[in-house]
Amino acid sequence: MALFPLHSNFQGDFVINVVAVDDGDTMDQVAEKCAYHSVGRRVQAQPGKVMRVRRHQDQSLFPRAMKVLESKLRPTETIDIVFLDE
Amino acid sequence: MALMNREEWYDLTKLTNWTSTYVGEEDIFPEEMSGCRGIPMEAWEVYDEPYKVSYDEYVCTQREKDAGAYSVKAALERDAFVDRADPGWVSTMQQHYGAIAVNEYAASIAEARMARFAKAPGNRNMAIFGMLDEVRHGQIQLYFPHSNTKRSRQWDWAHKAMHTNEWASIAARHTFDDIMMARDSLAVSIMLTFAFETGFTNMQFLGLAADAAENGDHTFASLISSIQTDESRHAQQGGPNLEIMIANGHKEEAQKLIDVAIWRSWKLFSVLTGPAMDYYTPLAHRKQSFKEFMQEWIVAQFERQLLDLGLDLPWYWDTFINDISITHHGMHMGVWYWRPTVWWNPAAGVSPDERDWLEEKYPGWNQRWGRCWDVITDNINAGRMELTFPETLPTVCNMCQLPIVGIPGDDWDVKDYQYEYEGRLYHFGSEVDLWCFKTDPQRYQHHMSIVDRFLAGEIQPMDLHGALTYMGLQPGEMGDDAHNYAWAAKFQSEVA
Image 1 (tube, rainbow over the protein chains, first blue to last red):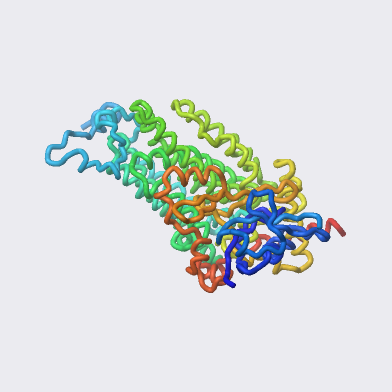
Image 2: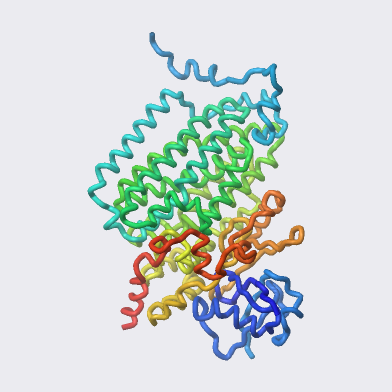
C-alpha cells in the first residue's frame, strides 16, 4: 500500500488535477478521490450515474473492482473519469 | 562648427566591422553567443535597420519621454486614482507590473547579448539603444507601482514576483528564459524582438494604453505609451536578420525559431492578457473581446509580416486561430479558482450581464465554461465557500508551465499530450507545446514543473499551505475575489 499520484481528467471539468490515490485502491475508489476535487466544485453531481475510470483518451474502461496496482497505470499518468449509466 | 546631419554620416560610421588579426573571428564572436550558423561575416554587413537613430537623438528623445511620464505621475499623485478605480482594473495593473517589470530588466541582458555578439553592425547599434530602453522600462515600471505599496502588499509584487517560485512567475521565467535569456544573439533578435515584441507586446501595449485611458488611469496610460514607443523601435531588430538568414539558406531554422516563440508568447498571453481583457476590465470599458483583439491586431499583423518576409505561417496556425476562442477562458477560471496562489485579486467577471456579453462574444460559452461557473456561483450563494477553494494542484504543462485546460461542460474536451522521454513521463497542454519540447528535448528535459517539485517532496507540507509558503505568498498578498463576490449575489437578486 503506497501513495500513487495520478492526473485526473474529470468529465465536465475545465482542468486536469493532481490526485494522490493508493495503489491498493479499486477504480471506484480512484473515481471517488478524483471526484472530490471536481464534483460539487466545478462539476454538477449526476445522481443515478456511476463514475468510471479509463486510461486517458482510451475508450475501454477499467473494471470497477480492479486495483491500481493491477491496472498497469504508471505513476503520474493521466486518467479520465466519466459518468455512465449503471 | 556646424554638425553634419545624421543621414550624412550614419551609414559610414555604423559599419564598425574590421578584420581582426590578433584573434580569430570565432574568438570574438563565439557561435554559442552569436549563433550565426555559418553565415559569413560579410553577409551581415547588408543588415539595414529600418529605424536609424544617433546616440544624441536617443538621449534627447528618452529624456523627453521620461519627463512626460514622470510629470503626469507627479501631477496625478494627489488624485489617488487607484483608490477609486474598479478593483478589476487594479488587478490588471498589479498582474502587469509583477509579470513585466523585472522581465524588462532581464530583457536588457538579452539586448546586451546582441549589442556585443551580433555580427551585423547595425544590429549591435540598435541593441545598445534597446538595452538602455529595457533598463528604463524596468526602472519606470518598478517606480510607479512602488508608490502604491502603502495601499497593499500586492503592489510590492511588481518587484517580488519574479524572485519567487509562484507558479505564474515560473511560467513567465520559463518562457523568457527560452526566448531571450538562454538563446544566442541571432535567436534573441528573432524570438524576442520579432516574435514576442513585434507580434505581441507592441500591440499589447497599444491596447493597454487605450484601456488605461478608457478606465481613467492617465498615469498608467502615459507610462505605457512611453514604453510602447521604445518597443516599436527596438522590436525591428529581428526583421533584417530574418532577411539575411533566408537569403543565406536558413529559412527552415528561422521558421522554427519563430514558430516556437510565437507559441510560447501566445500561451503567456492566454493567462495574462486574456483574463484581463475579457473578465477583469469593467464591462462598460470593454472595447473589444480578447478574441477580436487577437484577430485584428495579432493574427492579421503576423500573417502579413511573415508572408512579406517570405516565411510561412506556423504549421499550427489553424490550432492557434481556434485556441484564441478557448484557452484563456480556462486559464481565467484556473487563476480565479486557485486565487490564493496569485499576487492579484482576480475579478471573476461572470455576473449576469457579463455572462451575456461572454455568450455574445463566444457563442456556447454558457454551456461550456458557464456550467462550471454555475456550480461555483451556487456554492458562493449557499455559503459553501470551502468548495470554491482548491485542495490540490492543477496538472501543469511541462512546456508552458500553465495548467492543462480545455473545454468543460457539455462539450467536454480536455486533453493531456503525454510523452515519455528517457524514462520520464511528461505532460503537455497541447500538441504544439509537445512539439516545442521535441524540437530540442535536451534543452527542456530537466526542468521541474511546480507539480514535479510537489511530487518530488520539495514542497512541504504537501498541501495548499505548503504550496503557498513555497510560492512566497504571505497574508495580504494572496489573491481573493476582486469584488468580494458581489457578482454572485446578483444571481440571487435575479431569482428573487
